[in-house]
Length: 527
Image 1 (cartoon, rainbow, N blue to C red):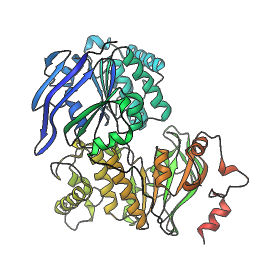
Image 2 (spheres, one colour):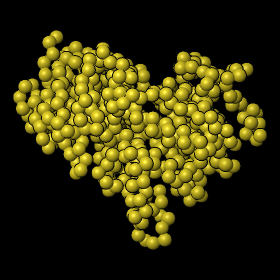
Image 3 (cartoon, helix red, strand yellow):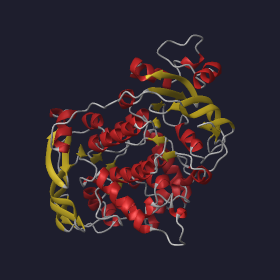
Image 4 (cartoon, helix red, strand yellow):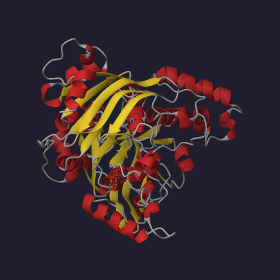
């Protein structure tokens, strides 16, 4: 099929105060191909695509659609041009159902006067492409993965010919990603133009035809994917040669800081999410948690943070049972534990508040005056901006205006500044570029060197094997085993994740595993 230009950008520029997000960008998006857009966090990728989706309007430059110059001043203008964008941060109304969210923005004649027909069409799309969406489910009851899936279905429902996907696989399992890629390939064969923003270089090489790279708001170049490698793309992104090795410092293991004994937790539907799980985290070690999405990681994190009720079992922090404590009580007792959730803007930060105000969320009640000490919060915000390289116009910028990587830096910086001895982090590098990801790894390793115990929930097994000291594998809420990262493989972990291997129930545990039977567990803890 001959590829014709769907969108052409000529010298497009966008600034936010003193920050130049995009400078003289020229880009060509073609029908019948998948174009990957790469760049570090804050390089202007999402801003550029937001101008195509009608969220921002360029300060300079021209946009052509199907050969004609167009002015895209609103999402409706983009929709009229058959441009649909799936955003990294969800654009959903929590109190509405999936169906109500899908039909938002449609004209009355397209709503067919009732939601029943819309729900039937949603089911038809799900059956056709293999998605799982309950049209009647409220968004506030959905997991992060379900919300992302709904965003994808929403764009498919609207029938866009030009699709822009901002980190679409960030919250999808490997199986869901494969299904999505199959859909994208079918759309490509049907002649649709697709832009995918992703930091997963292996996905870029797998799915795209061409790759365009931005660096610090400027266009670097476009290459054919068949001629690219992970290393060559990374060097174009950061402008220098890089090493893709993750450090794992050797630290003398300390006594356990957090012990989890026979823990059981239910999910929002009342089913067992975590079933009789036991493990511990020592000071100076990183314990990874591997498992297919939905196997209980989210509920485990929320329970440890005091956000979810425990059905049975105990959580002991330095000898004190914290099983029934609320997050506020954990803070009031001075328990040194920080939770960094996977949903950065939904749970970790207040998106409409400034960086300064988000710094104060955990400590605003500590002052001696009825007035909040914003001077201290501003100083803390400035230190995090300086230390972690947060790209922002000022400390008073609402965090929702920051790129995904900068949002994560703010969240991680705030939690670490409190000096925790235990850090619970879920998917801390999800959606981050190579440089930002390695900065996060370095931060976690520095905390490890300071004898902090870290629970690291991740999705990249290669990263977990390189970063973590031990890896606990969950399957359907049960522990399949806890293994030494030096003496296992991705294949072994994969078999444990699917339940094909269960080391926890084996009569004899191999030398490379760490047993979690109650007797040996307590014996090791009391040494």
